[in-house]
Length: 492
Image 1: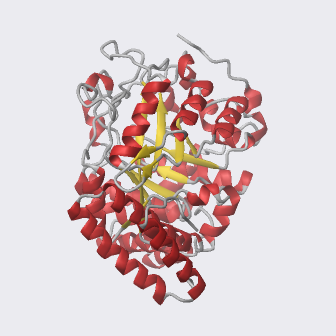
Image 2: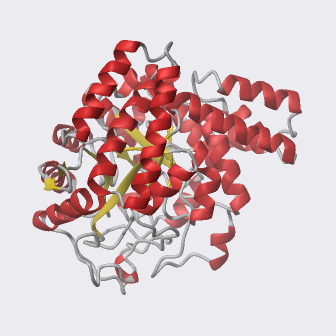
């Protein structure tokens, strides 16, 4: 088994009096405070709507303590209002590309764990990765994906960087034009600064690492100390190293359900966001909150799957949206469709047409057996079905990646998000990229829904002259016409 020599110098400069930014006692105390008054809750909601910075843990804990149904509804509506203010009504879709299930870790909850002797291990070659990207970009219509591997010497930074270059080179004919992946995000193990620089040079979009749990004792129980993942601090400070390596956008997450005290994990994520803001002036680009699901070869008690109820999940999504108002919020296909419908109005991204077997997009048969999967999915609907439903709910699906290539990353995008200006770019580019997808991939039924929604969006843009002056509308109309003629990747 591989081990990693973790040098305290990788995080010692970030400690305060030898302590981490996760203050267990302070977070626990915040959760033990008396339930807040309605007036205090409304004052917190008003500050969240200002979209300036992450809330302090005491305010997040106060929102988590609310049980009154009427006040909870105010929280849910405020969360929807914040999302609309920052990102408008668009939802970004993506797909995960699982490239390898080799892993040297032995996490008790994961199907990739090295102790799972029943797992069929496989690592995709570059030709196989190209085939996966061709299927995603050419058959399904995705423009962005997240590249996922287990932690293993054979799938380190060099492998991931080569895979990213392979994916970016794919260009596939479609019904009207061509398809390609325009943004590759990465979910991989914590890395050193030199390795993270390799990802930066290869064009990484967002670098995502989940802490899994911020509870130190639980973390130690779930992650054996003789594995790379066994070092809590090595993982906790990886985003500090990512910023040091020049990566602009980072993503946080926790696996909800590992800890029966799921509220502690919410506070951990908010504390993490506040630390990044204070240290680098840039908070997380996105936050994810997947719930624990069944997986082959795991050893957690069965009742762990009941640690976060559907009602708990809705509350934690709303409170995270309010607590880190500028961040993108990702709901995943681990959840059932009805659960996603409950929270999508607070979220900015979701995966669709998701397959998590190794090679599962390009291999039509035999690639989705349980032994090749990390966990069990709750929503297996096609991208076309998901987009049709989003349109029914009034959400426009966006395939935009232009902001990243135009420099709207890092502190630049943070300023735009906090000022409420990024949503204007989102709305314009959503219209253009949605038109692309409708022409190249949509079924007749979904295309009709999408075109009706685009008509409504353009009318709203024209009516909001303070945000969209006539010259902007004129450019939008020109770009829209060119896209209908087969051009692609025109953006603001």
